[in-house]
Image (cartoon, rainbow, N blue to C red; front, side):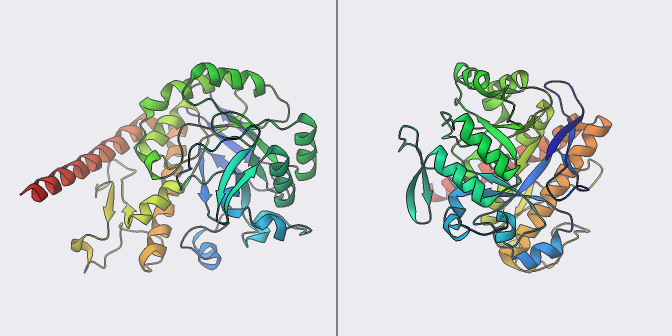
Amino acid sequence: MKFFVKSASKSSPRLGVLKDINKRENLKLDTPLAMLYTRGGSIPHITHEVYQICCKDPQIIQIPVVSTYQFHDAMEGYPGSISEFVGMKSCISCVTVQDPGDLTQPGHHYKDYMPLWTRSGKILLNSEKYMDIIETFKPDMYYLLSDGDTNIASAQKRVTKAVDNTNAFVMAPITGGYCLKSRKRCLDLIKEKELIDGFLIDGLHNNGPEVEFLTYTEIKDVIDLVVREVPENKLLAVQGCWNPVAIVKMVQKGIDIFDTSYCYIVTERSSALTFSLDKNSNMTGFEINLRQLRYADDFQPILPGLAVQELLGSLLLTIHNIHHFMKFFEKIRSCIADGTLSELEKLVSKQFEEYQDEIMQGKEKKVLNEEN
């Protein structure tokens, strides 16, 4: 797999393409894009059959080791890849370490080991074991091991062996928290490595729903440093439940890859994304919560013209939210192409701010009612 930048300058929005993908020579994936978030190799609430109905085009699926660690023993000797093993053969697989939809427990660090809280409890993962998993899973792309604060560097020989055995696209984590000196030190160590195809800006958060409320202002200095220092031809990724406003602002700086874990947390609170992508369309609000009584007898589509099946509960919401999120990224790419990304940012920001104001007003009203 190779990444090509179509046109861009540093610290600006850019269009790119992933192509020459293993065994899929004719497949091209345009960036910026969002990988499909999975848990245990499955999109939450969606069966593989429903996925085939809803997603006609191949997508990149995010495979967190923390939720698939138990597959390693079962796949020993298995000739296929992790995407084939989980029943999503048509998808491009990207192995990550942590689950961006779940809060990562802080602390518990050991020298040269990273703790993972799997379904079977805590396990300690070092670079040797992690690269064994990568060789067994045979993903199309993967992030190198990192604890979010300090790189756990694999020996060059070991990484080279894994790359040769998997022929995968390798993403290196850039760590150091919010300390710019630490980030710079990490960058200086890895940015010129020949084996590295792209970079993950790691360590900005501990994953989970709280990421939604991180503002771009809080991460701006780190993003600026990384974008300024890395080579222009390298893919740049972040992971986590970033809200659409933060996503657009990061795209404006040149970030290429995100994920749909935000759709997961919105679905888990029984909500549907409804923010407008066109200033000329009717604005129905940023999102709606289907637990509200006003929707109990409302059988209209969530959005007019929505091209998904009207099913029930979490399945419907997951399909809707992923569909809307993917349309959001299509709009981002078209806005980059015609130079109107700043207008989209203003449109989405206005709706998100109104949504946050509604939440705060609701909380204040609840407090007053409890006091009375």
